[in-house]
Image (cartoon, rainbow, N blue to C red; front, side, top):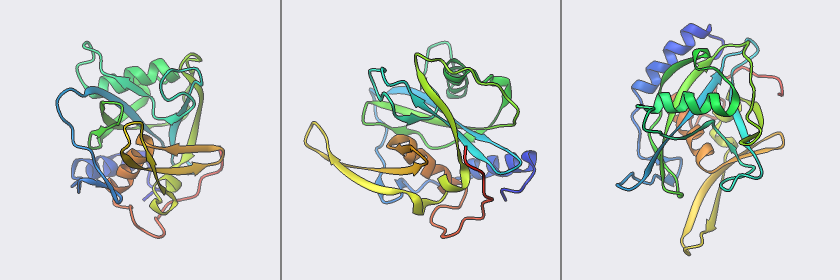
Length: 215
């Protein structure tokens, strides 16, 4: 599938997302239900369709940010009143954080909303980006923009399960995955697992991906 031309791949992915029958679990982790009082947010899951193999564009947040500093994340943020939709919010935040223009992104669909322990309900918006494109990261928010191979991120066997006890004393579990010197964990890892599940490759021992060189 990953050797498809971009247009064919975009149509296939869009169809998988629209027909995704979510089971209510992320791997073997419980999925937190949304309820009143949560703050809406959106992220863009940018699939970069390169000839040598597809990747996912990710950011490493600036170390000095008060929340989640230094962590790997998708570009995105909270919905503003003028956004009107998760898609517009995700594209706006992506442009503000990375300089990727909205016109470079073909929107493919959504993944199920994800509730974070910090009180946000996040809508992951999946889009396809075709090279070449220019990036101009905002240094006050983003320390680094990088790409990780989609085949690796779709291999659920590469994810590790962890548990920790929060400040409230409750035991919580989360996923992580390592790519080069980056650790992808928490909500970002969970949303990537959802993407693998939606595309029908979660749980396969050898997903049919093409290799992609290190970035």
